[in-house]
Image (cartoon, rainbow, N blue to C red; front, side, top):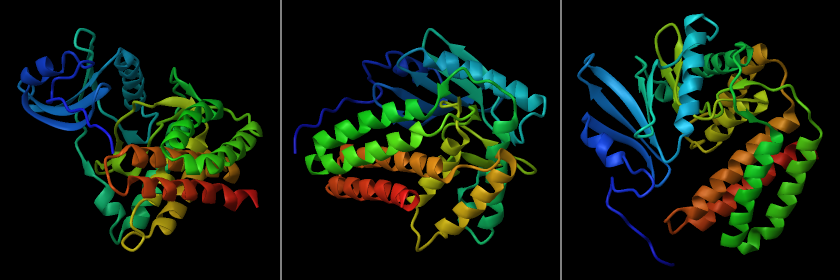
Length: 306
């Protein structure tokens, strides 16, 4: 199958200050590690006896995320948002580490998948759509053209890994280009990745975390992100279609009517990204899963291009 190259954590040639930062903190818990890209972790702050979060990057992109975090925090303080966000602490340029406080709340995912999930799906839809009406102006712009460029790279790599999918991938990209070419939408502020695992129950309000992809974009992107991630849940245990419909209805009541073709296109983009992730994985069934996700990506478009 090929070679696997391993290196002992936290020695990372790109995250050169990772070991330094981790050893300087108390009660470290690594939450997510992407070798050579970034590492997210929680730590205990002696200064205010609370949990804080750090995210170290391989470059200076954390500076822009910190600037966006400040805008979001200010918007929340001015009650321009209908959800809670984390208070930023600082961007440490020396170690390329972004720090912010924790949000007091608990994950919503179990509630979403419980008997009361319909109400949670509606609350998430309303809260996510509220960002589009907030008036904030993220510096990053991510429109259909940007998404097509990213997805084209994914498709090219997939075609190399799974050559038998080359024709399907080519036809799929043509359909996506056709849909995006028909739209010149007004860009609005988005989270960029508001899937179900990003939401917290904070009492009267929901909390939303991880604004790494905050941008000015088409609302269909955020809506499709939530829906597409739900698509991968076990339908025998979770009423995926029902929850997605409730989320979408609540989202559109605030953000306005979404275009079904553009929504399907972004849903298809997300499925192609999942296909590449499966193909890259060190799993014996990775290729099979990748083929399945490509089929799902085609299905998402087939329903609106009939």
